[in-house]
Length: 361
DNA sequence: GAGCCGTGGCC
DNA sequence: TGGCCAAGGCT
Image (cartoon, rainbow, N blue to C red; front, top):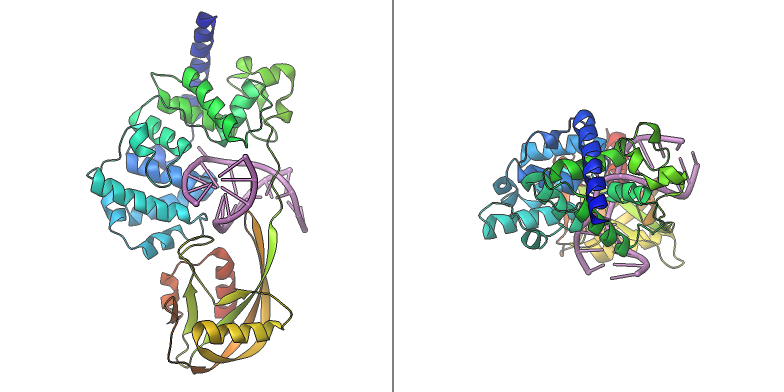
């Protein structure tokens, strides 16, 4: 039995690796094995498509080519480079982890599971990916692709949204992985999931590991993998103010250090509550939060924005500034239209900016 | 464990 | 059109 498993594993490795070397995409993070570049790519690729990541990867490495460069950069510049990519805590965790590597490991990315897993933003998948791809260590790197591929190959109906399922698949990979070429094995499994063993219409007819696939044999590949359905996003209604001062500068505000869109910039806004009119709520909010007296003008337009777990319905008002109080909000700034480009805004507020600034010209 | 955390593309 | 998905991790 044990011998059969080994023979089967060897044949699987051969089939997968042969296919991978003949069909792998030419991706910018596959040009060398620089652990820093591999690391950056793996963080960017979390829950994000390859085609989306590519331009960000180039720009990011252009600005922060080394661990040292990223370690000593301003967080605002790092967020600006991440602007539009989403899941912004990835950028802040990456910089924090890079600073840790710079200080505690003399700028060398550690090569053990234990050490690398302590770094912020590096979980079970990313640690295995860096160790195998950059350092050639036979560690499993189980992402959504791998879970789909293995669920089908083993015809397993385990729910892949459960943590236990991922751990089980890691055990399977540990026994199946090529010790000679763990990098190509892990990447090959992911590449197979991305190009052949796709979620909705897998190309089983050209699959290099079709002979090993229990789901294909039983013709149940379209039922797999099993995954719990997501809840639909909750809707929040916001009112937002576009305000210029006498110098033509615009009031912007930096979000909280934690939570949604942490430390990104936005136009002053508040979630609606109670019965009062939108303009009354906005007027009071601006007085209390920014110590300014205003006259709420016309409702300019609406912006809808859907996040993974919530949905914003934003009503934007044109606001006239009447007077400025003596106190000031520490996280707010008046900026010119030229300077605003230096600040990182979420896509929802980029929509607002584009509409309002175009209108102002 | 389950909810939080973005965005763009696809069918 | 909208629900689903994509090289997950943190709390």
